[in-house]
Image 1: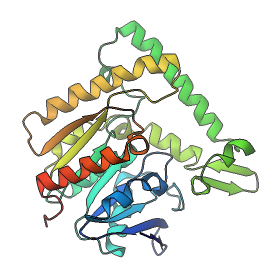
Image 2: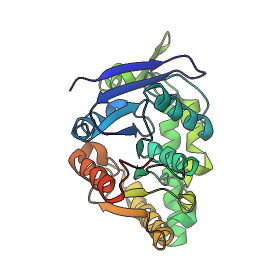
Image 3: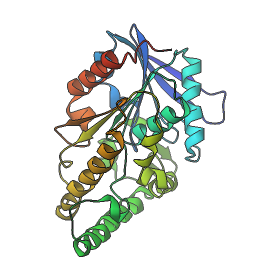
Length: 290
């Protein structure tokens, strides 16, 4: 099914949207940090048989405009897309950073049809007590290595990309200036998000959700992680699982699904993501609530 590109440019931050069409209740898809709405191209067509499906570029990403990362302003961006495309109470599905936005959306809309959060509850770089199963001295050393890795990535983002590297990325994820080609979001916005307390740990906010919510957790490391970071990530996932299960134990409207695979689950397993969304919709009636 052909999609339709929409630009919403009559507001403080321009928003780029892809309407995949489809029939049924609406689903709005939110990508992760450094991604674009292209992230959903394998998932969206599989949902259009049961849903009207729309994806958007978050502010500072893709073809959307720049603006500071204020969570309430980002939720206003989401509302602007919903209003412009006449989406009636959509199910909001977010991956990583997009999943964090979805949680905030659920808090703003306690009577809404629900959200699906795809591995978007904590950043890798979170407080020491959020990791589980690593002795303190070892954890301190691993966290220092992780910080150094992210600092190096941040420095690289502030420089133009080598031509060969830029050629490997979709144009939608890049920003071209007279000085060269840069990744989006820019280094300043990426830094703001990186050190945002809610980005570093959004698990506690889950307790305030009143609408149906599904949390899909990864079980494996991303491919190609350096050894030290690879040692740290199982402890980060264990901490999320521990804390999330404690919050959801007496809240039956909050569901947890562990999906074999890495954080890159949308690209790795689009069929499984679609199945999880459709089953959640069927079990909760999220597609028909108003």
